[in-house]
Length: 506
Image: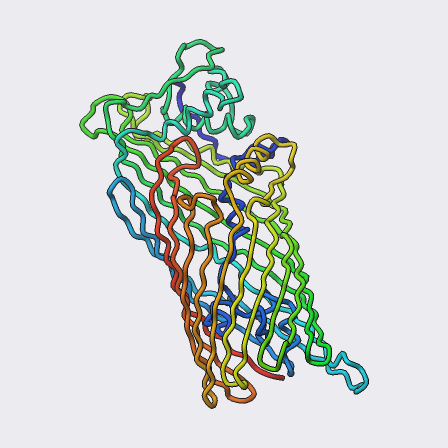
């Protein structure tokens, strides 16, 4: 195999054909909802579709802002704790991530109609920011795989995937990374990590076989660190008719910024004196972009105590871009003349063409009962069809195959949220429960989510202080590498969040 080349300058490459490897989970990352918002909202598990009167309630039903009687501002600070428990071939690992963030800030302005003959007695305007998703997370998986190596990831690219021819050996010997598309880039990384050899040592060879020891089990690790957020800025307008019918509209601007760093490590029999000893493959992906969505909603008072609500949330239309940087580190006793470790790091950031992502729409029906302004109970039922997740451009074969996969394997999922509140003098006591079905037809890949929450608040008259705790749990399969290796670890993700909100009337 060829000697390693290292470029010392930082280079940028842009490809005019879409080639990076996108997975269904990339779409689900932006399509699946998270419980965020103010402390009162989170304490009741977000069951606010027919309640209103909270700045975060407009995310469920835009008509909720019409229940405000005074101008009000709210700011929320949240502590995020994610605990990931991974099981891989009998080995269990636990990784924790902690973060503190201002996750919500907004204000509502109420304008009352002084004309007594008009049924439209007031309208409200809201500007509200929320961190829809805090992407900060850490996952560590390790174990001994008795049969399969990560060499399958690199070999599938070197041998040309199912529908493409393999890469020429003379290209692997002479090409620079920035001159290749994504498929051939991955083959080049595998070649310079000594993961495979050519079947024939001729320039036009296009067939390759693994160089990984076949008489060995494979110790494997995956360490994934994600940082970033998915934020939403909402402009809302709502009005009420005779204090019986409340309608509202949201216009939402979305913006996302995510850095995902994945380090894959594999080692072999430490007693061997020749060949590969270990390989490390690092990938850092930076995803950024923006999007737009809108929401419509209505709440009706059947009686003074009974309310019903209905809302529609449009798809979010994102425009995203990826930047990728990769390297390999190899320990091999006799692979090259230079000393260990053998580092292949082109110091290259690959900038791909932008692509579009459309998430599915959501419909929510709500019911709430108010007990003489001293207590309430609320139920929301929401439906979302994840089969409608769509990547574009559609004329890209890779993206179209992902769209077809999601259409065949994802499903319509329901979510139910139940919340209650009891008031005693200046104190408020709250609790909630939520359940969300898996987006998959077979819920092994991503399981159902269940969560509970609780909290309390104290009303000072002009201002209010609220505190909430929310817990959720979900199981899922976690792939050590994006493709080629069929073995996945079983991951249990537990979220513990504490939110403190301060609200003031003005």
